[in-house]
Amino acid sequence: MKNPYKAQNIAFFFLFLSTLLIVVPVGLIVVIIVQKGLPGISWQFLSDIPRQGMRAGGIFPAIIGTLYLVSGAIVFALPIGLLAAIYLSEYSKDNLLNRVIKLAIVNLAGVPSVVYGLFGLALFVVFFKFGASIIAGSLTLGIMVLPIIITASREALESVPYSFREVSLSLGASKWQTIRHIVLPNAVPGILTGTILALGRAAGETAPILFTVAAFYLPRLPNSLFDQAMALPYHLYVISTQVPNVDEKIRYGTAFVLLALVLLMNLAAIVIRNRFRKKKKW
Amino acid sequence: MVKFYIKDLNIWFGSVHAVKQLSMEVNSNEILSVIGPSNSGKTTFLRMLNRLNDLTPNFRMSGEIKLEKENIKNIDAQILRKRVGMVFALPLPLPLSIFDNVSYGVKMHGVKNKNILEEKVKKALKEAYLWEEVKDRLNESAFKLSGGQQQRLCIARTLAVEPEVILFDEPCSGLDPISTAKVEDAIGLLKKNYTIVLVTNNVKQAARVGDRTAFFLSGELIELDKTDKIFTAPVKKQTDDYIRGKFG
Image (tube, rainbow over all chains, first blue to last red; front, side, top):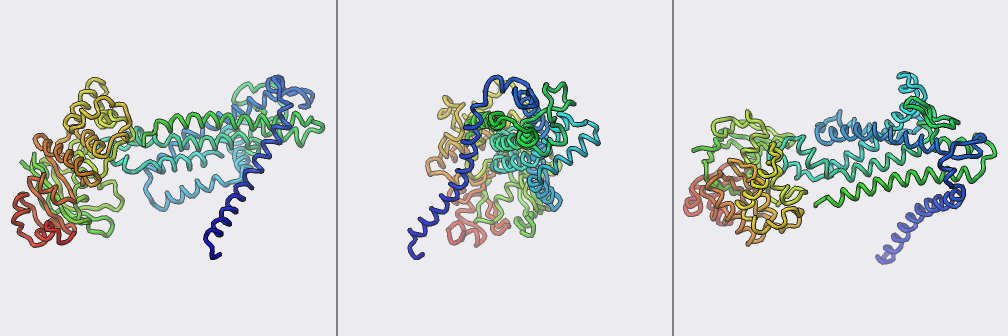
């Protein structure tokens, strides 16, 4: 290893190889799902209810169910997560208790999703007597994505230069005015990035909705927030493992729709984020 | 008339004794320059006058500071900072347009009327000698201005709030000589209406601008006198050594 150029080339090779190892499986997943799923996609598939024991018809109730669940989770988790992040980054003193709280929140992001599912079952379904319902499922998903939103928002808030805060305060603005007019607007892109991650996670998880909302087979739209609903990830699980003889087109078609839905939501959030980034003036 | 009356002021950050047993006065409508080497407590002293040190963890103080006979401890921090404005060492525009930078403080104090805002912004920019250069681009980002323009924008932003005192913390440390001259001109003309405390690393700047000059060393006030006197016949040897550039 005397030759620094050789060392550099070897390092470069391994860095490239690692990147490739990540990109290839992701690319393959997308290619396979598009290839096998796209032929199954039709207007009828997207807009019809499942028929013949889910072996025919469409997946409309599952799409709507997932949209309800994801929106519910974000409506619940974004405000609470953001407020908690503001408290943690702007108001909380740097002491042992607050450090423990911050550590706990980061670690919560790593708790297996099935644990959230059981927690949601115990708290929302049983204790609050919501039953298996959209509200119970949304709240469970919301709690699951809270740590993601809090952590991302906190980092976004803390990345706004301290000097901006000092300038604002030195002009006689209150702390809340400073947060509201200077810190928050400049943290929006980072907060939205966290929200994007949370959206994708909430849309794709099966375990948290398993006990709290997901219906095995419910060929109609939910009536209210306290009704059960079908959801794409669980539906995919059901038709892949629980119901025999489901056409491959339907299975991969469902996977394709789930993937496209998450991608679409991310895209929307990215567009909003970029609009805010353009406004950023430093 | 005395603007700031400071008696037995001590400031600590954790175990660091940053300002020691300081007693002095700042008169109305004077430019008081504060000179001294790095770590001599000049900026700490300055940030005490608008209670910006309150934001620093581990900050402790003893002694008293009065703004026109009222202990600043008893003045609400927001109101104190409205009365005592500050311009920082580096040009620090907020990530807003030129107009919004200048109107920011005014808005935060509750003024919403657009005409009043426009009037105040115009007046402040004129006072800071920036109006002619920016009057056609008020909606552009403040970050598009040059360093010197940005610093005059920061002065205008402070003026717009209509303070009684303006604290300058080495306002020209990042600027070229021409920009420095412009900022100094602006400061010189502000004396009529404001009391100014100017902390500077540049001894010549103190000689050019200040009515009186205070020399700080290791957190202590060594000497405070008319600027002419300090620069021609200082009483203390350390002062003489410093202004001759023997240390610092």
